[in-house]
Length: 136
Image (cartoon, rainbow, N blue to C red; front, side, top):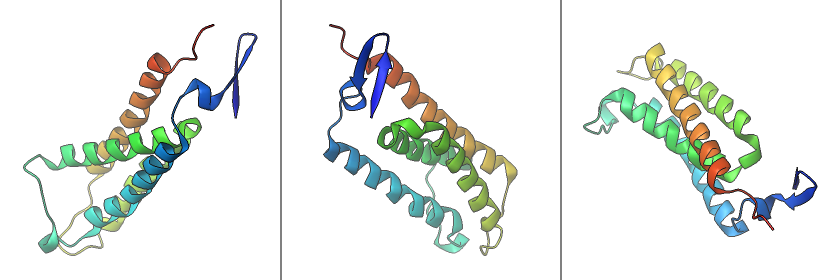
């Protein structure tokens, strides 16, 4: 894939240096987050493991981390990543109401979505600032 800047034609891999192995590792890690998020969202209350952080912080960090991994793996699909993770968070929150001892809250879905959007935006900002094409 190639990007055009001015009169120069720069390959996407040269513009954003990351070898294929690193990209595959990031992609595998990102996709591993998908079932982990589902498990943590849907596990019944008696099997739930919690941190000392409030629930909304856990939601934000989990979805932000997943979004960062996905955005680094699939750099040209940032909008799709953010919207998909927001929809996934909403779907899991709705399904959580079916899990024994768990309740579904709109606030948790919003915080999950905010974490996803923040993670993708953070990668976009860092990519725009530090991964510029080398000037000749």
